Amino acid sequence: MWLLPAWVLLSAVGAGSAQLIFSGTDVVERTDCNKTVILPCYVTNLKDNNPNVTFVTWKKQRKIIFSFDGKNQEFFRDPEFQSADLVSRADLPKGIASLMLSGAEATVGNYSCEVTESNREGETRIELRNHSGSWFLLMERAIIIALLFLVITLCAAQSSVIVLKYETVPQKKTGIIVAVIIFVVAAVVGTVLFVQDGYTAQNQAGLGLIVVPAVILVPLQYVMFGIVFDSLPQATFALIGLHILGYVIAVVGFALCVSACPPLHGSVVIAGLAIMAIANLLSLAYVFIMGSRMKDHPRPGKAVEEPLNDAKGVMLE
Ligand SMILES: *[C@@H]1O[C@H](CO)[C@@H](O)[C@H](O)[C@H]1NC(C)=O
Ligand SMILES: *[C@@H]1O[C@H](CO)[C@@H](O)[C@H](O)[C@H]1NC(C)=O
Ligand SMILES: *[C@@H]1O[C@H](CO)[C@@H](O)[C@H](O)[C@H]1NC(C)=O
Ligand SMILES: *[C@@H]1O[C@H](CO)[C@@H](O)[C@H](O)[C@H]1NC(C)=O
Image 1 (tube, helix red, strand yellow):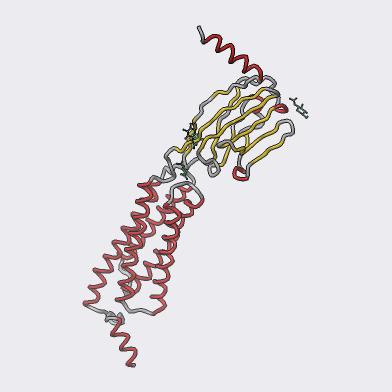
Image 2 (cartoon, rainbow, N blue to C red; image 1 turned 90 degrees about the horizontal axis):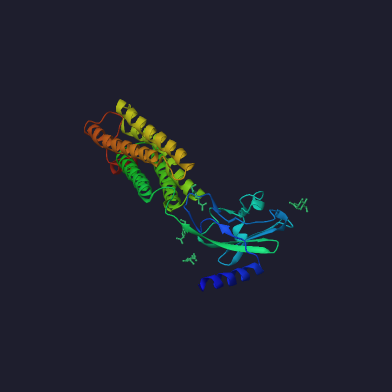
């Protein structure tokens, strides 16, 4: 029976400054994929339904980050929350005071929504939490980076064999080394940007740097085969075709992924990189096997001696 007087007392206190009542959840979750985050705030008992007498204040951990003064139609935004805005100003008279933030500015924490209508007011608290979920899963990122470094290793192995063992004009060797360096630098920068969690311009640029510059491997492979073989055997064209196939698949996968979060086609990028790795592996094996066979039966015009001997020869001349 003591509950009733307590309730009467509380109502009397409440009546002093008539309370606004809120509905809705008090916890919302976001992932890295949320480009915009909406913090819900619904007032159920607005009386005037007049934007001119409505005042909205949003706070984060007690600090005001956004306010809207309906009387003067004035906004305030904290510099750290420049993206903050009411979801719909037109819906404010209906009691919708939800806040919209960019994903980057909507850091996790406790927010509060305070609404005043004439002399009635109320406040509700919304906790914004992280929910695991990102552009690429950790496993996908690990596979993409592992395949990239497999491609780099195989490509570097093949070019080292060719630069060290085969004779050609120095410009071609310099060209090979420069191409490999460009590819490696792009791959390393891309990896650094891509490896972090998130769906930002940085991650997207990172994946782009991992995939797009790999086009350099196609002419590189063509030049390297040209050094090893006088006239390119048909198998080398098949191998270059495999390089191109892998590259095209990887680029298509990149284009599909860059616009979607979570990426529905991460496997396409992985498939493209895997084909590129296979093409590199087969090319390396082919150069190794066929190239050494040619070394046993050198054809005229194709010097295959050790570079050291050649250098001596040049100096003697
Ligand atoms: C984040 O995005 C998901 C999917 O689009 C959405 O359901 C969710 O409400 C968003 N979270 C917030 C806090 O806006
Ligand atoms: C709000 O104020 C504006 C200008 O002061 C007035 O034109 C408008 O009718 C008012 N709206 C309401 C719903 O009273
Ligand atoms: C938000 O408030 C809840 C409950 O009061 C608390 O458990 C949580 O740690 C707070 N979160 C932050 C980021 O302060
Ligand atoms: C929430 O996730 C973001 C981005 O993934 C991260 O920067 C932040 O530290 C996380 N916050 C907490 C409290 O886990």
